[in-house]
Amino acid sequence: MRKGKAMKDRLLQDRERLMREREALDNQIKGLERAIALIEDKGSEQIKGAKKQPIKALVLDLLEEVGTTGINGATVVKIASARGVTVERSSVSSLLSRLKADGIVTFDGSMYRLPRYAAPAPTRDLYAVS
Figure 1 (cartoon, rainbow, N blue to C red):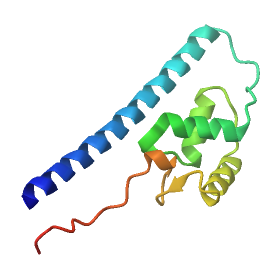
Figure 2 (figure 1 turned 180 degrees about the vertical axis):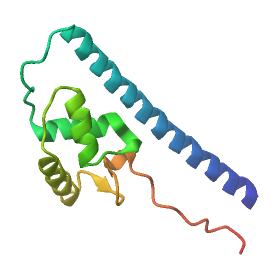
Figure 3 (figure 1 turned 90 degrees about the horizontal axis):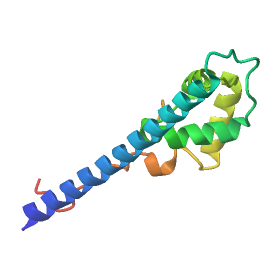
């Protein structure tokens, strides 16, 4: 009976993880579709200056798009640049640190994520036989 419960718990955890990954992929696809739409709208016109967008809104949008993948300052700068938005890495890094301090994002040592996309803390199987 314990093995059945442990197996069910593992399957439920795997299902939850896969659902989070699917949501993250869906968000990444939406981001790519937006980027493609922006490129198609621009046609062959050359961008005559970078768009201005509040950095916080940009970073929060990107965090939502990347989901479980996470981002760091360099990633934000690259994605923003590809979208025609200029941001300073130092400003982005500072903002990410503030968002972490405010509990708005989590940080695993290399990537920032919104809490709903952060990996759950490992749990101990209380019924495991040692």
